[in-house]
Image (cartoon, rainbow over all chains, first blue to last red; front, side, top):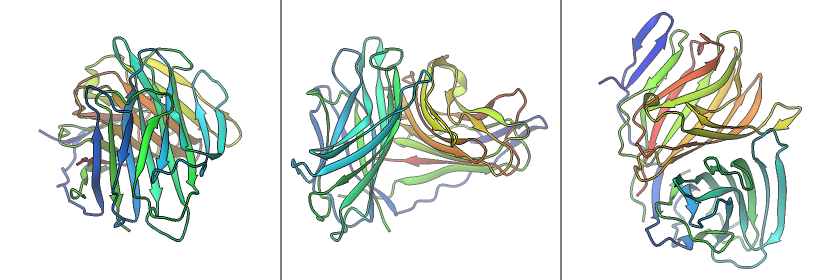
Length: 203
Length: 169
């Protein structure tokens, strides 16, 4: 079975399968997969300081039963103080002007691109890629970048979908990041099958 | 505890001639996410909408997409529902011209719909973030890459596409 084909006006051509090459510079650290009971807070703990950067890859939704877009919060090293700031810009479709905003000296970094919520007949969902450079460097504050969005699959409140980007900083200390918590901004749980994976990137 | 290497190239191609459709097939279901890295340009005239088709369209018109974009002078956001394909950059031009990083999350999980996060840009158009949802529980086993219009508009020779698999511990 060919793994790659190209089709053009000149006809078909068969590509060559590239043998997989394993690299050790991008490693899976921990994955949280939510069970049927849901999960209030997804926590990565005891994160080793042996990598250069961190990346979180998230597929998820909150388990409320109405069709509302939830966003979620990111907290570092269990710091509940007002030590976070962030900016965001999001689009919600329909030709609308993108929305933007920020939080200054707040208690979490908010992921305004959101997550979806349960909807009858299907599962709304959100996705995000969160990158945290130089997370183990004890000489500087830690910043992160998030791109992501969600889709309610036809529901319209407050919008049927979002796409956006967030930039944030944790100003609590210069400590290496050893714990990351992610939880919905409302009181809802992460829904079943939510999958949040933490990776380390060597430098 | 680190579980080992996990970011693996599955396949790649650099087009030797202008091509309408590139298809990665027989994608193994052994990873958690896919990443498709695209470096493409269009034959003249500029193409509308860079798109992906999953599993030869077997699931039907079950794609939704929301974007956030700017062409340098204006910003905007648009959306499509119940489409036959996943949609990314609104326009790709002839010339240098476009890049797109497409993250296909949970692509092999048969308990969930799929969410696709992407960030792209085109020298002649602008920048764009897209969030796509594919309302199918099937694992994604093939991906076809193409421009939606004008009819017959092709990807220029030299365009390059690389597919990676990422496996969570």
